[in-house]
Image (cartoon, rainbow, N blue to C red; front, side, top):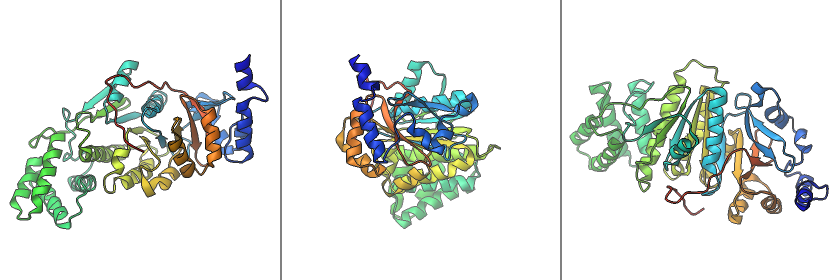
Length: 405
């Protein structure tokens, strides 16, 4: 009886907190209050199976289901924010697998740590594994694009990921890549290396080292080939074979996968308003540490919508994308902020979500394990929910990537 009174009684502590937050017009929480927003009602509470969309969770205290339909949302993209151990990967997997099941979309998950593969296996999901470098990344292969366009994509990814700022080094690199495509429409990194050896610039030594690293991702300097994406199923591209200390290599590989997915989707004759592909990016903070890669995430989110591609990404901190954060959020259909006992994280959240610290402290009281606050475009008000997914505890020996926030 005590527990029942605490959670559902008319004078319960939770209801008093929710009422106070609602009175301050900072958040919608009660079972009736969420209906004041026509956008929330339309996008989250339709009743037909085709209109329901994906079950994200339930409003805390009211138990009302929260649905999201990417095909009618203002944006088909999702951003999940939370520190290590808060359940980012589980949340991404839950949404992506539901999208694959409900809409039969092609899903490509970038698995940096190697745990996406193991989690899908434990749940019995069928998926196509692309294990780089055993399966070649295929940087130089003109994947659904002409050779000249591919040369530009490779050059741009190297310069951004490896922070090649020297103009002479950039010129030598582009000249070598372009010359390789002039020799053959399917060049290897050996062709690029030959072009660098012919040059007399001292910068070529540094560029040659970078090319050696990237050739490893493609199965060696003489290898020609590209990984295969299976349509209508879940594809996992594992980068766990890349040393976590080589963040430049990880960033480069992720950038090339971005290009590949956009090339792949642009080759399909589809209605851009209908989501036909999903790109899942766990540990997206890796990108933000290298050159203009955070801007690339923004460009990906803005461009992919026109190709019927939904981007689901997770990162550890609101600061990961720097000045691009506000624009990324403006182009994101759903923002999910996962619960954590860290006051530092929530105080950061109060600044980026424009919620008072008093309201954040109230939220820390009512949010439990597996809970989150979400925002759905175009309504700026956060909603506290219990997520509809299992949050696994980290297992002994399981690979993780963490850092100070």
